[in-house]
Length: 507
Image (cartoon, rainbow, N blue to C red; front, side, top):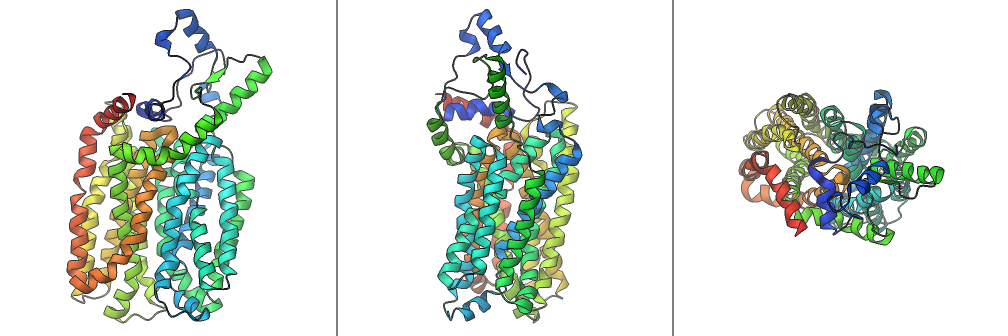
């Protein structure tokens, strides 16, 4: 409300994120308080439009728990459907090639991996637009386009058409960049752990369940129904969006509030704390480059993104090779082999409960004795960093030695715990650290994540052929061990790195 000074919504803009990005973009506020007289400072405070504390229902963090959790369940289900679509067609790829009279087996990999290339581009478009125009319209437009492209995949008449629409499906994904940011919009810092665990589970379970559903559905109704299923599911979710979705981005909400107050009062000096003198064109240009600027100028984001890229690449490498491992080593049939993914899926669920129990607990405990910092999200990453290579070592050597099939399945469960315990806390850390620009940070992180998911699976077959399952997975495990110091270093030096970034960009 105009006429009083209000504090920033808790958790909205940690560590002066606005100042850091503004200096990156060389944004100059109209003038700073230090350059003004006391009278001018008082006038600016009077004209500041902000949320009115916990009584202001326009602040998403003050919405009812029922509404907030309904939105989290809804966007998490969208993310599940999206990631389900990523790999649901993998088991039916031979059917697709047979129908289109193709004998080039490269298409089997391309049908899956081209999606990831599209998903590299998508968040770089979606995240900046959401920071300019809010989450509401971006969710709707992205979901509708996703439905259209999914239906187009089902109606494809040749393999090139299918590959093209699979790429566009990846571009239309909005949940990757926006779901973690919506958690930051809706929940205060000490309340985000459970919601972040929920939105983090969906992208892990989708690829695990996808091959199982795709295998049975393809055998029963044909490969096209794999895409029709996604189309129908996302169509239902879009109807739910129309009924439930509201704008959650605080910058956009306050912008509308300021515009309304200016019309009602005639006071053209009213403004929000997020406004600058940039033109619309300048804001659009800055928003478009922000994800890549952050990725390659913030050491924190670069290291975390590289780590997530490796971890996500491991997930897809294991998922794309587990079928051949269990068919060749344990003689699983094509209809039963999908069940070998259940160990990985169960491990992901356990990892979610680990994150749910530790993320908020650690932050609340630290807040009693010290100021809350984004780095307090990182201890579970250390746990995941040790668990991940254990799962890789056990999976590789038990399969190499032909130990009873439950042993490698349990190993993939351990691997799932490590994967989730690494990725969910990292996303939580980025949301806390980058505040209103968390969507851009997540989008920057998605570049390495999807590069890992695209290209690392291609290294799986030659790696196993050259070194075997034991040493092949051991090499991956040793690489994972090398990343363990990253969260340790950020816990120790993260705050200093953030301050250094701010000073560097102010030069």
